Image (cartoon, rainbow, N blue to C red; front, side, top):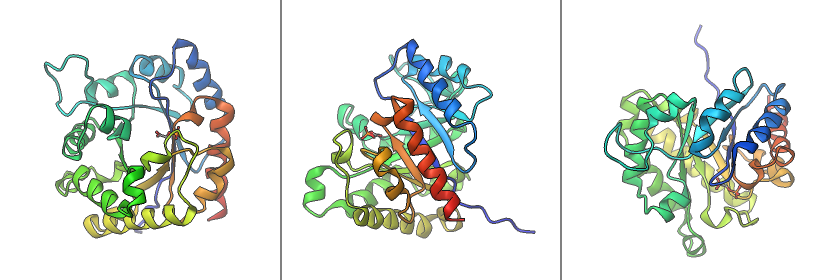
Length: 263
Ligand code: PGA
């Protein structure tokens, strides 16, 4: 009998350039809090220096670990960089690619993200490809064209030929909503996520229906439930609120509740 693949759901915490060894205890608290979570996957992306230690601490828990970036080459003379295979070797299963802070701080363009995506797929990581408009683009009504272009250029058509598409996760993160406490209206999020889903379906057929599309940008306990109620929102990429278990766990619980209600 044919089985229907449902779209997976995720809450992924991005610690950015935060976290010392003492922060492993935060991951432990989060692991305790998600022990009974069944309907969504939970991952934390600590800085590179903590990946091995947090991954070790998370063995036998439901929490998976991710990196915040990887290089576009598999190996070689790239001082200060980390390859996808190294992330995997250190215990990571996910990698964030093309975060707007990388696009801004390191001038990363979508073509480079596409090359990184290939490496991530080779290493069998779950790549979380971030796209999103700046405030100026938003105010000029350019949101959909920016997001569509970034998605097209960051996830190239040939990616699907490698049959790596089922692992792909897309995160819509309006740049102006990241770390600001501001969020788009629910209607705006709905429109962008619908446009992303439409492009994924048009380009990747059946597989495009089951690629998770996360929302990111000032997600917190107080707005998570309403955001997860929006069609085509399959979870969240969480920055600031992933740094404390008390802030992060209610977001995971909100997604779990939303998924239970929609069944
Ligand atoms: P924020 O960050 O939740 O602190 O807004 C989100 C992100 O950058 O992924």
